[in-house]
Image (tube, rainbow, N blue to C red; front, side, top):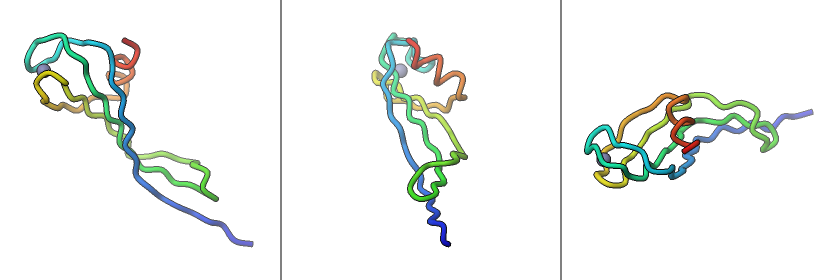
Length: 77
Ligand SMILES: [Zn+2]
């Protein structure tokens, strides 16, 4: 019997509705990128770790890190 393990990193991008940018102060679309690493068994993802979230303002292009809760709040807009 054998097991086939794999590990890969991923980036998931989503653009949210307009929100006020903390740098330029304008209402603009914010791009949220989730980065993480997945462990898979027989190509089925079973565990994700090392998640981080980055928010990029589409108006000024500045980037900041965000918590999972902040990213989820932006995605609901
Ligand atoms: Zn901005």
